[in-house]
Image (tube, rainbow, N blue to C red; front, side, top):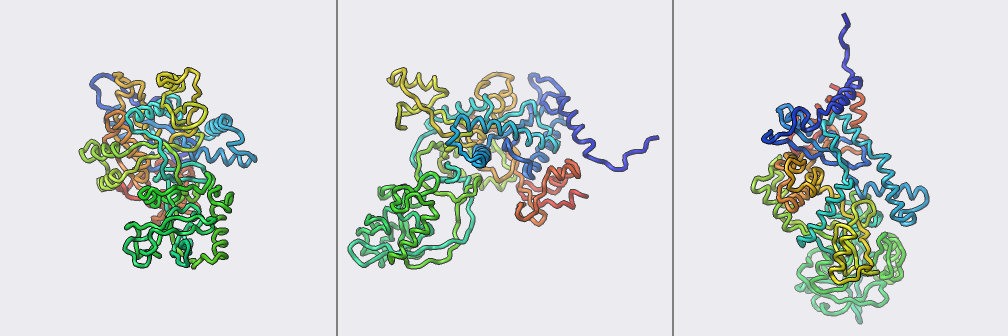
Length: 588
């Protein structure tokens, strides 16, 4: 009689069992039955698409564990289940990796050109792109890999173009010059949601704004003296007795070659805060931008796209913004304009992707109007069309959607979905056509009275990655080609049933899917939003390589098996609450 196993070794069984499951078609929605009229409503789970070139982390592990439970449970109940997997092209993150490789070779994307750069990115994607899906399989994800999608697939790219064109036809897409968050290292605008604020030790710089033709001065404080060259006013409170007599006079811009700016009054200024006098820089501060619009002040951009100073900065032209800060302050000190500097803790905006300090600047970008779309998404939750689990996130949903700003969707990148806009003529951007392709753009141009051989130039920018991700629930099952086609995947599997994801991307991704789904399909893309928390270290702190407390899911699966990790992640877990992960729990 053969002796039974002394010890279960998951490594010897899990991968082979999984291969058999997948090759047998067990994960497909009709694995046990053929689709027929009147069958049970399919249970549809759109998988949050990880970055195509990413590596598995605990955030992936928790969503696989929870979504796999949902998928297998409903399969066992006899329902057709579609757990639809795929990957995201991750515009900024992927382009950044290829740019780093080019720099290591002693060149840049500008030097190699767009066509060659994109060839290199696709090459990088082919080399790195399969790792993440193989790693998801190692966790036992019973997704229907036969339907795996990638946001840059031809048909998904077509859906992105269609979405942009339709939104433009509805009057929801426009081009405008507004204050944006600029990432100088990436050389692109990023959305408000892609900016992280950190409390950092810096300095508050106090200096004199001399009043023209007198010895009087206004004491002004700033954390960014390099922006002084872009000042177009000094603002005080109209009731401030210290400065009322100066309102209407001119102040001399420090190191500005004698340029003067008006001293204005507005109740926006807090008399009790700082010196009570504000420098107004409409080109480089969002609050100043609003005041500049109110008073019709000129907007002066003093920076290049790479964060260096431009000709409007005078003697500091060409200097990096932080080098310009040091040099300008030194020059002002020598000119007797410095009052003092003090240590100051400030909230510094940093790019979520690149980590660099974000520079607010005014730039021409493409925007999507979100007020109406946001109202529809809010109503869907309020009316019960969509249920958020846990319910306490209803209030957060409401707060964000009632204070929503228009969405800047253009990115100054090359990797991504190129914006389907063609500018008419050899130069200029005032006359443009939104179309599905160049042939349609030319046809529209002729209809507008342009000659057939008119020069058309396609917009260089690409769309925000979250724009294509926002179409995920319906684009992946055949929108727009299969609109109205009975028994098509779009007909069977849209709307979805449950969107399970982390609360940290509730607005990055989930809200945008709801807004886009309602606007483009007139349907809520799913009926349940189930939010899990973040996986943290055993002591509740954030996992970090610098702290050395990161638990690698791949190493954990290799040693203890996928079941041990998954069980440890989901037992005792409450929706929306962070999950402290203890290795002892896994080992047990």
